[in-house]
Length: 322
Image (cartoon, rainbow, N blue to C red; front, top):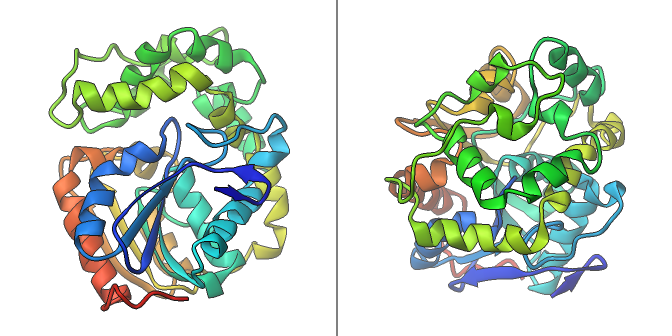
């Protein structure tokens, strides 16, 4: 489909009320494949796009094309294309930040949000790159490293499968991702700080699943995904009008007990901040034995929570919001 001037690839299963899944980096729609099957089996229409810059969706060149505001235009166009006034949106990582901002910008199009691992937090007083530069003076920080165009693109693109295996493993509950902070930023690449990954298959990722994810990045490289990081300062500029805004749509949050974003990237007390900022927060669930890729690491638990939350948000999945 073409939406908002971008040719977008969309995977979907089932029929009924739409549930739209938004992935992060370095993922594609396929990171949600367990959940698509479960949500479709529960009677809903499960939809997972390759967000712009990824997979079989277009990859614009300019960084400005990767702001949340631009991608929200893609999602609203997707809603229009399927003839739906509203949907439930599910997000992880960049996809989480995307659906939180969507709920601020277009709450009338959002029946509710279900977010994994990346809680809502108000706009910081300083631009993200200033905060990252301060941290990078003390240790390696991928957020800072990714800002220089072409550098990470070349490093990661030259060793695609090795990078993906290392980063997926390091973000899981099987490793402590913040150990990457033990390295200095100066003269250090991302592969220098990521651990060696054990051979596949892992208990939560098969060789076939890894191959499906890796094939897309072998074809596209990582620049599209990295441009999301390079657009974060612009996101900060574009959300000045929402600095003190509350997320008013119904929301559910789940997180892995060993998620590095909750530990090191979401502030000192992320759950209190979340509760203060999202007055319609319905439920928060900690998932034992899971890290950042919780929907793969603990697929059955996530599937059960998703379908339970959807039953509260949309009791009758045949109630399509036309």
